[in-house]
Length: 338
Image (cartoon, rainbow, N blue to C red; front, side, top):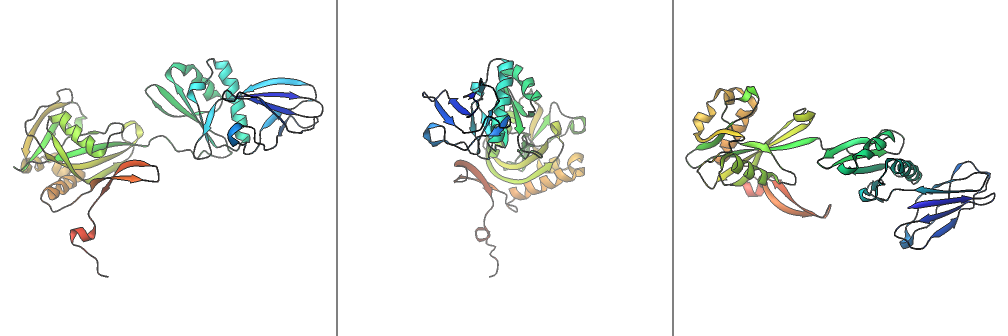
């Protein structure tokens, strides 16, 4: 999108050129030539399809004839009063990007926009310092891109921060012989070296909790399993990379029994009698793991019931997701007196 701004002694005109609009439209804003340099223009519909400028924009006005072009970055509105810059339309040079970025920020500010989201791909990494110099701040980075943000209104930004948590799963698997599937980590901190523990790990991107638990068991031990329930979760802060951490403890039923370890991660794995597992000093002395083991064994003995996964559809975001719930009071036979 480009603003072509000619000025005269009596009127100010604004012509817009848009790459998706073939005809050029010129709008007379009727601003006297003696006005201040940056005065707000009127609210007018200037795009095809009924798109309307919400508050008005600023035109450059001077006492002498002027013809200039202000290139704006292509962007679309988000759902919260902000804009998302189209990453495929970024200028190829730093100078062109810097000019368009400043013009765009000024324009969006006059439109009453709030947050600006800018995604820059790895092959245009030279644009990142330009955006930082303009006032953008880092939001998050993934392989192949970095996301930056700019908060236009006065006051502190209320844009959501990057992901604050990492999600892990612990898988408690017990067979019909009252043996627990345990592993000994090949590489781990010294305080947990040599300890027999349940399989644990982080879930992958876009992976469901129950799928992550099943996968971790398979990857570390070769055991096929099916998910039963989530019996507990641990919430801790300032763990890896200063992130908060949630570890979901899941119980699973084994579907196979022959162990085949992943030697790149696991030193050893075995089916261990539950009494031997619980008698380890680490599990006796660690308050959290002792509570986890007690809950998992109670669940295996049907004395404790956790949360099971139910696939649901929500109109809130039009997504299919899994809702983890326990049984109702009616289902468990516990009905409150009315």
